[in-house]
Image (tube, rainbow, N blue to C red; front, side):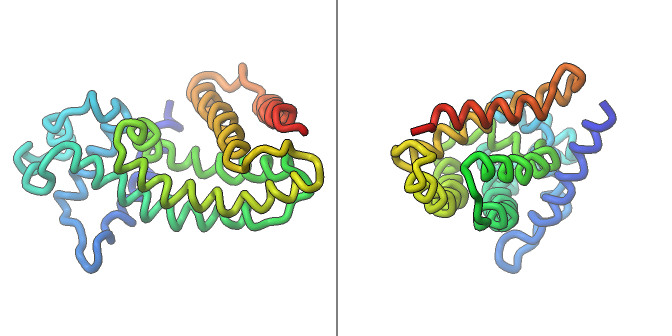
Amino acid sequence: MNKGSVSMSEPIEEWLEELGKLGDEKTMTEKQLRIVRAASEIFAEKGYAASSTNEIAQRAGVAEGTIFRHYKTKKDLLVSIVAPVMAKLVAPFVMREFYKVLDSKYDSYDQMLRAILENRLAFLEKHMHVLKIFIQEIPFHPELQEQFEKLVLAKVFEKITPNIRRFQEDGTLVDWSPYTIIRLTVSSLIGYAAIRTLYGKRDLSSWNDEQEREATIAFIMKGLAP
């Protein structure tokens, strides 16, 4: 699909522009940027385990030995991609935009969920090929999990908890720990977003997005009713 090819290159180029500024006053060389661009594309397409440094070198137009001059192992290359994305793209860029939603006042939990979905889906679609790398790899790499928990989950938890407490006091949410409520909510929203993305790549005529979104929110609200 033409649309898919556009969405692959533009977000990666935007992210690489940020990545090139990484590391105190140090900038990445042109060869490093080519390596990281190629690796980010291949990791997103095939996953980390199925990718080879030889394939990355070929796409980057460098010798395989050049990769190992900059990165000791393939794992170092993965971390060099995901860690900056986490630090520079997810936080503060992603979180800064997300804070606008989380800091707003809502009359109900389902109203807050709709605002979160509207805000995050646009970001997810734009950056899917980069985000896909840590969606795939975070479960298998403890150091990436630690960064994600520190830079993203802890901040989201801190912002959402007061809203959850307020809705619990109003009697509209079950009296469970905010952590449990957030965990159950996030798992449902991610499920909706993941299937939506899959259908978006195939045939949107078989996917009623508004109906599926409302069904997901209704499912969450029924499960969290007091």
